[in-house]
Amino acid sequence: MIRSEQAENYQLPKGASATRILYWSNDLYQNPTIASAVLIKPAGAAPKGGFELVVWAHGTMGVGQMCGASNSVNLGYNVMPLLAQGFAVLAVDYAGLATEGGHGYMNKIVNATDVINAVPAAQAAVKGITQKWVAIGHSQGGQAVWGVAEQQASRKDPHYLASVALAPAVGGADLLEANAQQPGALFYPVYMARAIKQQFPSFDINSMLTPDAAARYDDLVNKGCYFYAQAAFAQAKPGSVLKTDWSSQPYVSDFFAINQVGNKAIAGPLLVAIGTADEATPPAVTEAQARKACAAGNTLVLRSYPGDHVGMLQTSLADVTAWIKDRFAGKAVARTCAN
Image (tube, rainbow, N blue to C red):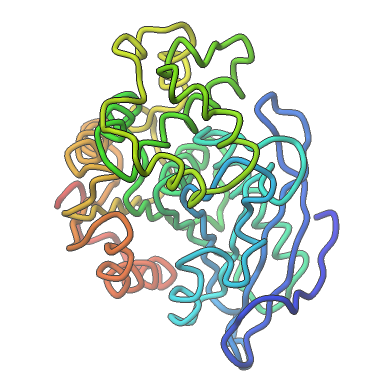
């Protein structure tokens, strides 16, 4: 931990408290970098052993420094519903969001490292939370916590219990191709082009994006966040963002190979939750990655819930909460690789 401070600028339930934390993590090249997070504790005295700690990894909010969840008065989304379940919630920004240094968007290793490194920093800064913890993330954050489970196979943190990937943005080129055909998701390929260039500076975005999409690149990555990007492509036509041969361009396949999931061992159980009407992360794409991980012998639970990419957060909340509480209670996973 670098430093921490009480935060008074968030809209919290009465009696809840927030602590903003700066801590060391690692960037794309494994150099030290500064990341930030906010730890929110429920109202009232902590139970014996502390409030159960869940680490929240948010979905796409943008790629610029101004797009950190901690810059929002409600810390983005889904933090307050988790808090209402009685958890202490550690909301991670990811390095480069709300801090300097550049955000490694959709970089599984970097985003997962930010999640993992936030835990000891929060535990050093705030009393009354458990040493044991569960990671939970949505969309981009779903990929990140899948990466957490992979890293824990070698890190072997004895306090890590499990991960929950809600509508995870996994599937690589198949997922991006689906996004490029969906109104409301047409800006994702531009963000992904930026992610590839962030990891491979020699990458030419013009080899992947159509001229119209490439012309909006600088504007999207430097001036606004999620809703700005979505509005910028509100009038664009499906299929108008990616070039036909985009996936065969240099560095594209390298990026997706580095960030794929399902092909590595994981530690602890992983719950993968799918929204049946999700168009941003189509169920078939997610299921393919989950079943690949199952075939490799991993302990994975695959479940479907009504709703689209955002709506499934609400329909899955009660079930996901019970599943997490079972992990803190030390219960064995009842179902593996089943939907």
